[in-house]
Structure formats: structure tokens, C-alpha cells
Image (tube, rainbow, N blue to C red):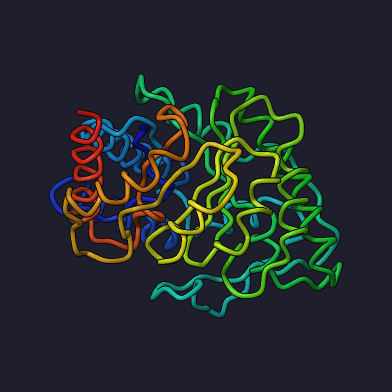
Length: 322
């Protein structure tokens, strides 16, 4: 059993890096800090976030995505052809807001976006750091498409660009690349299109690849996910109470990543509760193909609760291993 986290991490932390990042972003937006000064603060907070995961005993880390406004904007502001709307909208069924990307003209890829950030993060620790990218289907679902006017065409165009980013990350040393697809199972899902997007995004990528689903109910989409050309399938068993029974019925052909701590609720799960989930999923795959993580990113939680959750996760896995 391998412990990991999903992606983002709280950007404000009591007593750790405090509100330093938020203050720096505010000052940067008022032109009181240079780009280099903001980057120095982002680097400092990234180091702190990685150190916390490492000290908690997590096996596979992320950089906490503390430079990201949301899942989509870093790439939407990087790809030529996108603008960002000013109006705020609700992100899935969460109490957080985001600004929707708008595709105004034919998108074009200017080159890798996250390679330097990944290299920085990987140099902060001796543990493996996974790279996290938005999945093409979710990216397209949450865009306003004024160019293609076709979700299929947009999904596949984004998949080609994400493929270039993933290849660059693999060349930079990323041994595990995760695509976040929370739109799979949330509302009406075009499973064929989602799988084809993943096929194009992962084609020729020389790294272990994962697709993580969360927020929705994927029990009806498990056969399609098992056909996706990825190595690991991430399943949120918190948001979807039927997910565990669906996994038991499914033909499992991939490694599994089980989202078993509620990263949208401050209540701390007990070791006993987690072990009940572990017992249900442990027979499904070999232990070295079973990842254990929160059900989604930790940014929805206050820092103290987020840290307590990952410590509890590690505690429960170590106790279960015996």
C-alpha cells in the first residue's frame, strides 16, 4: 500500500507559512512585488508544503499546487487562444469559485508550462514527486468554447497539448503523471470521449500515468475507465457511497488509488473507519498496486485539519501493514 495525496494543499497555514503567499499575491497584483519576488515566496511555501508531506510519512508527494489559482487557469493562461472570464462561478458542488476559461481562437501550444516547477519540487525531497495535470475531458467541460463549438474537438485538441506537456514532464524526471478528471461521473458523462482524450494525452509518455476521478459517482463508468490507457485509476469512495461495491463487482485491470479520507470535511476519520475501507479494497489488487489517498485535493480544508488528515492516513496504512 502506497500513501499519496491528490494535488492541491492549503495556501494559508497557521504557524507554518501563515498567510505569506496570499499577502505576496496581493502585493504582486498591486505591482508592489516583482515576478521574481513573488516566485521566491512561492518557492518558499512549496518547500514547506513538500516538507510537511515528507515529515508526515507520505510515500508519493505533490508540490501542493500552491502556484495554481485552480485546476484549469495555469494552462488556460499559457495556451494561446484562451482568455479568462471575469465573472466567478462555482467549482463543481464546492463552496469555492473559479473563473471559466474562454477559447476565443484556434488554440496553439507555446511549449512546456510546468517543467521548471516540477524540477524545483523534485529537488526539494528525495521522495518521488508526481506531476498533476488537468484531464482533457474536464478541461473541455469547464471551458466556454467560442472557436470549435464542439466539446469533442476541444477535448481532443487539449489532449494533444497535454500530451506534449506530459512528455516534457517525463523527460524532466516525472515518473508518475496524474490527470485529474473530476467531470467523469459528475453529471452527464461522455465516457467514449473521456477515454479517447486520455488515450491521446498519454500516448508515448514514458512515465506511469494515472487518472483521478472525484466529486462524482463513477460506479457506472468503471468498465470504461478500465479501458483507458493509463496505469492507475483513482476512485473517490467518499463522495460515491456505491463505489466500493462497484469496485468489488468490476474486472480490475489497473492499479487503484482509493480516495478514502474526506478532504471536504474537517471531521477526522478514525483508523477503524479507514481499515474497513482497506479491508474492502486490499483483495482487489496486489499491495504494490494500491495507492491510498484523500478523496480530492486538500485545499478545501484549513491547514491544521489537512495536516491531521494526511498524518491519520499514514498512521492507518502503517497499522494495516502491521
